[in-house]
Amino acid sequence: MRFLFLESFYGGSHQEFADGLVAHSRHHIDLVTLPARFWKWRMRGAALYFLKKVPRLQDYDGLITTDLIGLSDFKALAGNVCPPTLAYFHENQLTYPLAPGEQMDYQFGFTDITTALAADVIRFNSRTHLTAFFDGLPGFLRMMPEFRPTWVVDTIRSKSDVLYPGCRLPKLDVTQPDDHTATPPLIIWNHRWEFDKCPEDFFAALDGLLVKGGDFRLALLGENCQTVPKVFIRARERYKDKILHYGYVASRAAYLDWLKQGAIVVSTAQQENFGISVVEAVRSGCFPLLPASLAYPEVIPEQFHPHVLYHDLDDLVIRLHRLVNHYADYQAIRFNLAKAMERYAWNNVIERYDSLLESLVHVS
Image 1 (cartoon, rainbow, N blue to C red):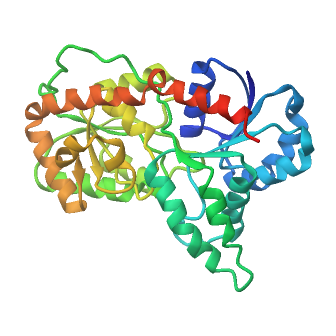
Image 2 (cartoon, helix red, strand yellow):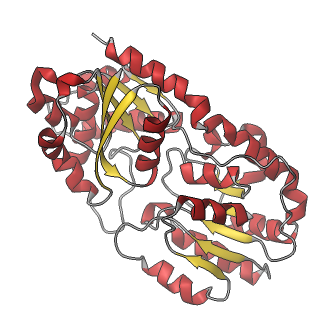
């Protein structure tokens, strides 16, 4: 079958998902993209751009989009030639945290709602995300002063489910991982350099580790779409003797090499609906320290929760200190965690996507 994939924010997890689906599906998927910047304008205007740039819609069995597009605008203007549509929600604007000093623009939440209504099938990237969306939707609608369309909750829910994104994972080294005891452990940050990943808390934890006498090295990876946040500029000076790398690594091979060198990956996020970057790091051998919230308890198998999930900043500092001083004691857990991430490899999830796409074509 032939499908058209419109990705209006081609970067980060959106890019990883799109590229992985195209590469692994048994179906033919044409991918049309826009760069990963100005996300608000993408939600407002990408549909109008795509209308004049996409191939003939009638040549496709189905359409795939993600959440940063006004799908209802696209389908309304495309007319009856638009094929059945799958909308994949990486995030949503009803529950996404606001940047400091920012006020909610309600229109983006309504764009999510109309996109969901216009889609024939909806998939969220985790149960955590789906639950948050439907927990937040009634309250969002109640902000309307009157004539609230409460019917949309059940309508959207009826065509929604969860499908984890596939991940491009390195081959697992079946030998025992290096114990990283020859030099101080390398701590990895491989998340976006943005407010919702709470880098201030990450560097505060490193400060606390230094106070306790813990030694480490540091690799600051991850994408930065606009200007470099001040907290990273300050960190570059404060940790200059410990930083081995600072900035985005464009080469996939070089990025994975840094993850393989890493000993510990830390997340201090306040928003994470799945966490491809964490899955990649854990698969590469990094021991994770993650909030006991968001999607992490869902993504990390339950038997590892006592070892990797922390509850507050003080708990994170304590766990970091224990890790950097007794890293060899965690090797078996680290290796078993890396093996457990195999469940998210594209080869293990693609059949569910292909079956979903085939069923999409037959949606009445």
